[in-house]
Amino acid sequence: MSAFDLLPIDRDTAVDEAEKIVDEWVAQTVPAVWQEAARTGGRAALHKIRTPADYDAWYPQFAHSGLVAPTWPRQFGGLGVGNRVSRAIETRLAPYNLVRRNQLGLTLAGPTILTFGTDEQKARLIPPIVTAEQIWCQFFSEPGAGSDLASLATRAVRDGDEWVLTGQKVWSTQAMVADYAICLARTDPDAQKRAGITYFLLNMRQPGLDVRPLRTISGEEDFAETFIDGARVPDRDVLGEVNDGWRLANATLSGERLAVSGPGSGGQSRIGSGTERLIERAKESGQWRDRVVRQRLMRLWTDEQIVRWTNARVRDTLRAGRPPGPEASVGKLMYSQLNQRVQTTGVDLLGSPAMAWEEGHIADYVVLNFLHSRAETIAGGTTEVQRNIVGERALGLPREPDPYKGLAWKDVPR
Image 1: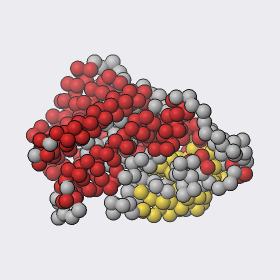
Image 2: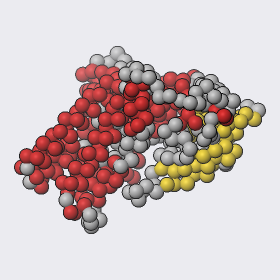
Image 3: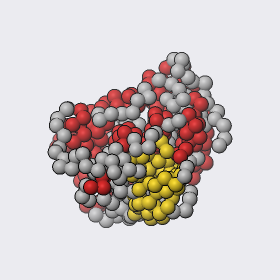
Image 4: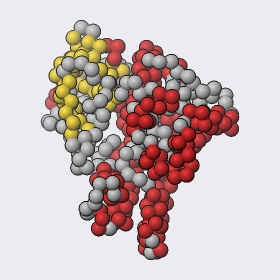
C-alpha cells in the first residue's frame, strides 16, 4: 500500500485554519473543470462532466490526504480530528460531491475493527479501507435469517489454527467485487442463539466462495447471494472473542442504519434525490404555482430537515469514537419511509412521461430512484425491526415474548 500524504490538520487545529487548509487543497488538487462545474451548476453539472473513470483515476489523491475518514487516527490514514473540525471539513468539501469509495468498509467494517480489533488487525486492515485498495462487503443476512438475524445457520468449525465456514449469505452489496467480508457464523450450536456467534473477517479471494449476483426490480445487480463451502479464516482474522460476535454485530448494525439514514448521516445514499431537487423541478415546470404542490413539497422538506438534525446528533457519537446506539434506528426508521414519499412525489410531478421515455430522459433517473426506494424500508433492517429496537432499547418497553428463550440454538425450530 502506498504511503499517506496527510494534510497538516490534527486535533489541535482550529476550525478556521482547517477550513483554510482544505480550501487550499481543493484549489490545488481537485481538477479545475470540476471546481468550475460545482460553482456554476452544482452536482448536476458535475455529473455531466465527471465520468466514473475520471473520478477513479483521481481518487487516490483524496484517499491519501486524510480527508476520507478525518476522525480516524492518523496512523491509519485519518487526521485524528474532533467533531467540530470534521463537520467543517465536510462543509468545505460538500459542493464538490467527493464520494467516498468503499462505503461498506468505511461505515461498517472500519468502525467495528477500530473499536474491537487488535493493534495488528487495525494496522493491517484499516489503511487499505481508507484508500479503497481493499473493498469490503457484509455477510450477515441469510435466506432463513433476515429480520431474525441471530438465528443464522452458517457454521464455522475449528481446524487447527483456522476456521472452516459452510453456509449461505444473501443481499450482500458489492460482494461481486469485494476483497473482504465481515461475516457472522455460528461456532457453538449448543449455546443460545445470540451466544454462539463469532465475528469473522473473511478473505474473499479464496476457493470455497460462489458469489452469484441478484438482479433487482430496477434491472441492476447491486447485491449477491454467496454459497460458502469450506472457505477458511485464520485465527488472526477473528474479530473480538469467539462466541461474542453478536455484541460486535450490534455495533456494526447501528453503523449500517446510520449509513442508510439519509441527510446528515454521513453515508452515501444511492436511493434518490432530495426534496430540494423536487422543488427545483416544480419551479422549472410551473407546478410550484399550485399551492397544493407547494404544501406537499414543503411538508417533505420539513421532515427531511428533522431527519438531518437527528442523524447529525447520532453521527457526532460516531465521530467521538463510540459506536452509535439504538438512536440510529430512529433516523433510519424516519428516512426509509420519508424517502419513499419523496420518490413517489417525484414520479407524480413527472406525470405521464414516467410511464415511457427515451434513453437519457429525466424520467430514466426519476423512475430508477422510485424503484430503488421500494427496498429502503427493508435494507439495513426492516421497519418492523427498527420499531422494536426503538421501543425496547430507547423507550424501555418490554420485549416481545419469546417462547424459545433460553433454549440452545440447535433446539429452536427453524
